[in-house]
Image 1 (tube, rainbow, N blue to C red):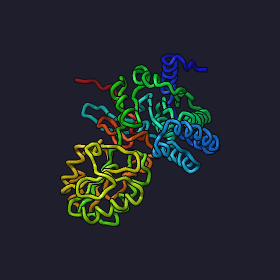
Image 2: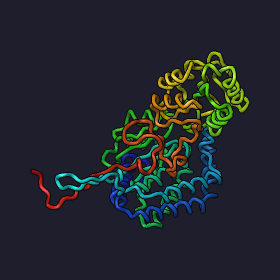
Image 3: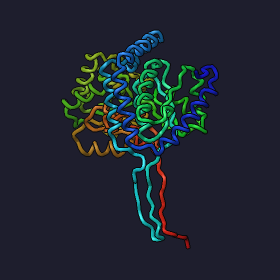
Length: 418
């Protein structure tokens, strides 16, 4: 039994075992990793009743903490969502193994033949909040990329994550891979997070997945490199050239499909020329659907927007709305308030779309498509470990390929340098 009172010793032990597992995973056969993930998916489905039971304990905990309806939705697992977890595990399993893939190769006049090939990062630490499916997604993607992973889920999803983690370990065992390849921090004590952020001897990169408070803490305190997943302050700009039917469909889905995910729209920008027509219709439709609209000047709404509404991630049935003069006005607003996660333009004018795509530097830009597609699974990655909003190494959905580095393999034939 691990000593849960001595957090530094606990985390050091987890780190040592992760490092040892990573050294084996670096050359693990692709088929073994595939088999582990398929067996894990089978285990999740076989244990679905147990997972739902454990999730009910977490939901009770979340209600006692006063979590918002959107946060409770993020936390909740039912049979359909568990089926989605299984599908994601199988999808990652079916992908080509990224490890060892040749990214480029060339010959030099000196006689050297040089290859740049994908290689695992080593040990990945993932710190996340209420969504228990991240346990499966992160474990699967790290394993696929040949990395060991240390998972530290949020206190709200403690029991659900434990049940899912047990299935991942069952998959590793069935495939003959080291069970320490996917470890879960077995305590709610926040001291474990502080330890992870300074474990430079054992962890190669930290991936925080959660709200601004968590990500800010990690960025301030980490001594380990960080793939930042900042809040999703997501904008949808409706141009004067927008097709009204497309605009209605996309805006409603982007805001209301699931309000608690990072790809949910948080700010609606409307071209001045359509503010009284299509713009007002969009806002009325949102309000009829139960969305509280924080409206700027010239727009109907539930209440008047204040400065605090621009650049705000609601993660709930709220949206800010504002009139802009044109596409450049939208670009200026987004540059000022965006978290560089996802932005969308709804337009039929190709020049406006090109200008929007060219001049906004967010990780994901969309045209006539719901921002709820900002998801690794929807990008064909099977799953994601998060949406990286920084510019170093990984950006946008972080899948298995983004969890690799590379090395150079150089072949000669007794070649010497003059």
